[in-house]
Image (cartoon, rainbow, N blue to C red; front, side, top):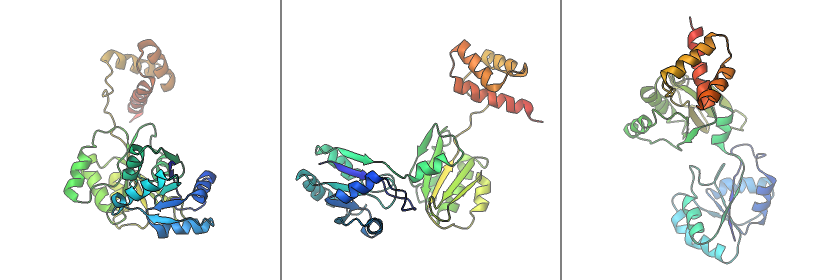
Length: 280
């Protein structure tokens, strides 16, 4: 039998798919990060199935027994407390062991805190890097952030409320005070909040630890003028098109057709040039 990987609500119990409810109802066994937490979800939907704990402290010990049950044809479901199993949560070791034993994991898609935060953040969504929880120790955290300084994609972290002020201060020191930051708090819950601003503003806004579950998003590194790798000739032609009154989108498209260069990068460079020319 396959190992089912069921995504569960990240706050609002209505955020669960019909397929997920059916798989949970039909399961022979549900392996949960916290049986008490998952038990509340099952009670809410009147699902009465056997539960067993699987968390970071006992995952290795649980694996042989769960594989044995899969081998006998039983249906085993893996869930975390919220969202996707194995994403900043236990489950990776079991999933890998199941694959090696010939059992195909089947994902049952659903809620995800990191994706919910990203799509509502207002930051670019074409490239992002999810990094789980940052290191707890200050020195390790600053070194870790320093290695991300030139990453162009949006950086996404989970963090505890208690450590959020320290993380934001380290972001200012290592990534820059002007980096755009979004703090998504209590997603899908009654007091859901999105805070948006510059990194140094975030330090002031969250000087006192907030309450609730938190996702931190940081804009990727901005390329400086000319850093896209375009030749001086391309830069000159693009600037000339814009100076002649051509729109940003049309100029980028035309130059992409002529040169074969990526239109998206040309468009971004055109935006930069148009913005700098309109500045006082």
